[in-house]
Length: 148
Image (cartoon, rainbow, N blue to C red):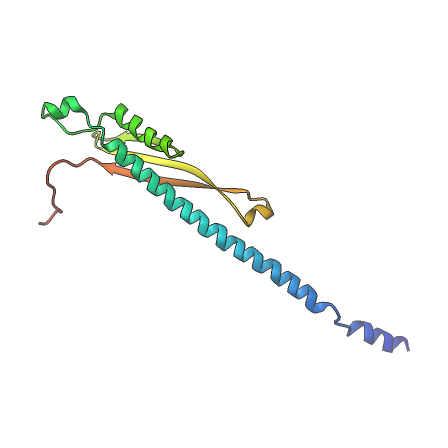
């Protein structure tokens, strides 16, 4: 009698599928969350790159008039270029850093932002940092690719 009772208890699978399904559902929700929030972070990064590029182009319009009118050089005025790029960033509600490098013909902009997660907030990840980079190089005259 005791032996038959032990066999019945050991072979009882009642509720085994429920645990399996619960584990699989939790794993699938996690995978979906990573896919949704990961894709959204990529779109936010693309937007930050776009904003940084536009800010760099806005700053690139601020050439140094004294050097340009005198015919000495076509370069950006670093202070005016930084102000123009920051003004563009401010106008769309973005924040970033602007730098003028080298021969005063190259502007770089780095935009920083955050993406508020939808699914990952359940596990304590409320936001993901996003960084975008943009660069504009001032060109003057007609240029052709090398080798032509």
